[in-house]
Length: 495
Ligand code: G3I
Image (cartoon, rainbow, N blue to C red; front, side):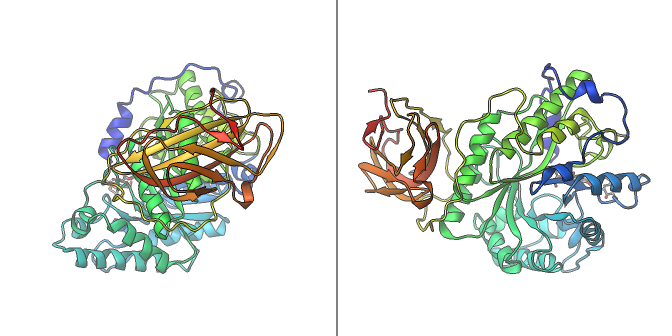
């Protein structure tokens, strides 16, 4: 993680000089925040924090715990459940720190997010430098998953980061003892074992730098889409969200979350912090705006279930750049009030447009096709989106392709003034594309001139509304966005 830290420190951290609705009213050093506590405003939404290991022994632990229990309904141990803490030597399991936190969380009605079972870092040397072959290391990994997960009863830990940070920036697999010795299959093996150990808990893949659509997030997406298509158990993806005051492309964040949602994967913002170079007013405002925008996109996506901040006061953060919601003295910062303002219903981003794509239901169809490439080894192509405007409909077709495989995410907007009840979107593939499976639509035939028809739960498109569906396929030669579409016989292209 040293390189990530360096990247974040060097990231420029140029503040965005925009006016803040939060700063003026709350710049004074009020020790207790004004307004309601975050967890009281959150409803079913999970607002979480990472608990430091000495949450109950630090000199200011009373204050720390007061903020922890009053503000949050979800908690991740920052370090206490990692491999070096739970199995420091082989088959010697120690849960003292983790148990204390679990007790604290349960006493305060907080759900628990376990972090993390399999990771290249904070793994003891006896694992990293052991003399393993694939079989012996797999058994070591299985034993760790079994013993750690079974220390708590089924579902007592609401969600588990099963595998953490297994991808490189270019979307390929990161080298680690697990990757090097077991190979690509280790992630799948870990998820299958975790499901066997606890059939109730949510199983999450967690990583940094996968917040927006990019090569790394596409590598992760392809792996999870493959898992979903083959029945490998996985429930969620964790977007860590270690950012700077310049923020990220929020529309790309929304697009990224939507593609995970489309394959039935929940999204968790797992480790949010926003570094700033100083606590000047403009930097604090920029920081608040980043929190506000990320929260707004998460709240706009029904499959985004949680936002967790990676610590409580700045002084205990792993970063020196004042990245959290509370300053060193537990005073709420503008970032806190940004979360407070947005965590209820009806939140609106402060400096960019709300994405217009309609959020769709979790796909219910069973997906059986097996992708033709090994996820994680392909070279992903940056997605392209081609909006096609027409009299009564507008189509967005987002293509991700690798090797000889691809996925397409299609959003159809009804731009007429009449509702549509029952829809069929037709197009002709320009090359040798073959649809292998689809979600939120039925597609027939599989190649050539095809028609995507609604399924039972998305037949209606209100005037001005839209539906989204997607499919997976293979191709040879060129794979391009179809030239035109018709919706119920009406041409959506300009022709
Ligand atoms: O507990 C020991 C202490 O006894 C010793 O005196 C001291 C000396 O360095 O080290 C203490 O352990 C440190 C531990 O944090 C607890 O403070 C480790 O050195 C230090 O490496 C460790 O850093 C953690 C880091 O993960 C390790 O990779 C950070 O607290 C933690 O915030 C950070 O969290 C990670 C997530 O797990 C995964 N995503 C990125 C995130 C940020 O790096």
